[in-house]
Length: 210
Image 1: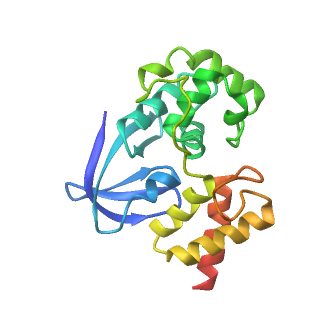
Image 2: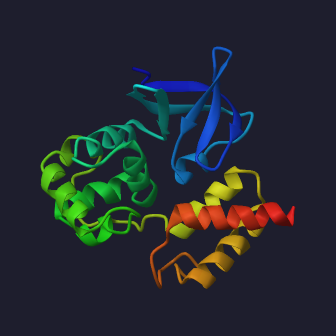
């Protein structure tokens, strides 16, 4: 099992980064929020989980061990594979996810594309009593600070891909305005943000503008 990687970042893509380890470039799949913390040419250290299939070896990377542990825990639930587990972590930060599971907040879980009411209820049922083992903070206690919005995560991801912050913000706000997602300020929400879809659309538009 590859539990972590460290080395210079060779490239950053829409859903993965390439990290050089011992002269080998490893493709590491990650959430937009994690990718936004990386910079090309700068050394990075990521907690990782290796998913082995008959025809593939896929490496997933996370900003910290807590997220990596949650990634593994999510996959113990029937019907949750690595892609859906990563999508859940892309929409809900570890602390928010732990609270949603512990408090039975199915509405928060349903924000994740591919998670319906039955899936959300199954996640709560199977993980409510297990999530405390990987949570950094006690669950069931009100949050003291607001988590970054979906809009903020998409902007950070675009900046991590090399686009100027102002240009990234304008592109994301334009997409959200058209799709009815969070308001441009990022301080509240008129609707939920599909971070992956918003990132794809904004990236496509910024690419054409170059």
